[in-house]
Length: 274
Length: 293
Image 1: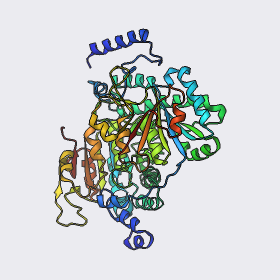
Image 2: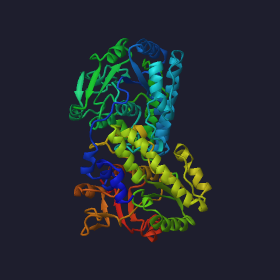
Image 3: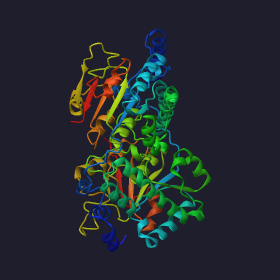
Image 4: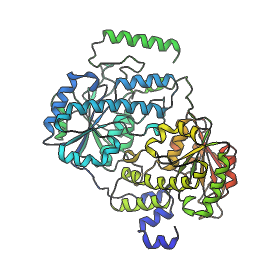
């Protein structure tokens, strides 16, 4: 583009971006500023794969009832985890030396199965399952039906990045759900799992694990925990977030927890960016 | 993990599956019942098995949007001729950048308060437009732009059917793009998407075609005394804290984690004769490599 045209048609920021380098911190600084909350009334709720869905009706029927009970009060964008079948697929894939991007494709399929399952449990309430390509219809469904189901995996597929350690795709369903809450400026990000929240160790393996009701990302990093209740990428991304600077983890096996979390009550563990 | 360890672990998993009152219904596997976030568990997935290379003979090349395509015929046609020659005996996967239109849509989107993920989604259209421009010029060679929805899954098939393919270099992050540490510019742009393609498919080389000879200690367009850097490791590059880089800076995070493609080369597309040597791995621009950390 010639400079004359640029001068004529572009705003100050436009000129900086067309003529400057996107890797220049001074240019990047100029791109900060207030971000529009796109769906400020919506809550993103992720239903765990291994923790909830793999338990079958015992865990799922009560949580589905609780979701339905809350439809009159809250809009929900419902993501799903992958769980044990993803672990199986990752195991086979790792044994064969498949690239991380291919493992990500396999994880996406399992998370999609779970989204379909959750969708059928909610179908009689008119709640649709949407794939990434259908996200432009999401606002309509939220207004009309108060909830939608999506698969929690971010659709990175072959473009999933390698992790720092090992080969398990680092951006899975916690991260994909979190990014949906961030980009839409959602009201909350709630992870429905089978533990009360964050512990000092995995409470399934360590009986001395201590419950942590509230923590900042920096505090969690300082504790240097061998295991945490949400994907580490969520903690990393929260620090850069424009909107969603806290997430909540609740125990979905305890009736009433989701209702309380949606109402903004202090239940489970609240993890904050700062 | 040794073969014996694997067997032991699988046996233990079988055993546990029979006796454990765990109400979760598991499928027996080495990762069964595990937290995938556990660091120890993650370490065991490093694996002795080498990562499988899907397309070891293909070369990935990213043609700059602002640096090459926006310049029009004077820059593009000579490069297209050279790409045509390269295609005679090589398989090319060509990514394109979005250039000036992406910068423009970013500025409008930011002015309206749109978030990073939306900007990333909007940018896909610009690189796709450029993929179609390049695809038109390479049509006589049977090389066309492939729609992003089918590109990844069908790539191995397409490169058997044609000498090369063109895609919008963007990774499909769209509204799932990560918010950057400063400001709102999507960090995974077309250099990153093209690199990740090369890494996942295990391609032979990854080349960035820009309008500078490679990396300099300062922007050579503004500083005639800028010093050329022929090769550098990511660690050194980070240490030097250069004001600008001629590629997506997220590559500095991605390349050190490489399993298959641990280096890339930046070449000057205004000197098309450099293209073929670069595709074959010869050092004709700036080579950036992961280093051994």
